[in-house]
Amino acid sequence: MPKGLLVMSHNMEDVESLATRALLKRAGFDIITATFEHTKLITTAYDLQVYCDHYVREVSLKTIDFLIIPGGPYVKETIDQHDELLTLITYFQQKDKLIAAICAGPRFLLKAGVLDDKAFTAFPGSLNEETLKQPLKEDAVYQDGNIITSKAAGTVYQFASKIIEHFHGQKAAETLLNSIYHPNGS
Image (cartoon, rainbow, N blue to C red):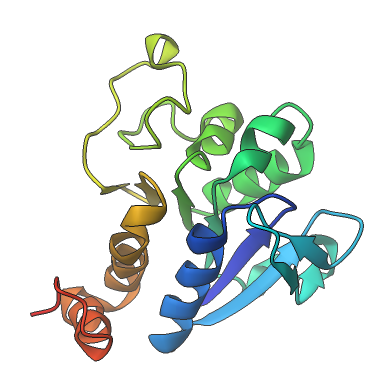
């Protein structure tokens, strides 16, 4: 069973974080939530309070197979103050482990330098596209090697499906979508 680390921050987008977690848990994944904040009680962008399982410093990264970075207003608010997250991203990249980021979350990947030679997608307008080495992909979700990126909250089903497909194949992703009566199931 793949084990993922979902990094939670104050002002994270609710759907991108919580729905991704719920869908992956339905598919049998072990998802650990952790934060760099000074409290495990996180207030989301839409004022829901959720508790994280751990502080990131408490997590044994050797036991984690992949990293999930949701988007939300916090990205713009903290992009220049989040060196710990950049270090975490770099660790996963150096170990060639899957890194999945949605909406504005790919901004952290870009800042960490892991997208320099990768094609990716992100929320339109969340990046200065003139400074990118290549144009953003128009796809709802896109995978290039060990990096999965997705556009926005509305693409969360495709995002979670792509993570499932990465570890267990397309049939497993379709099985999840069918189990929740998603129109993209087979």
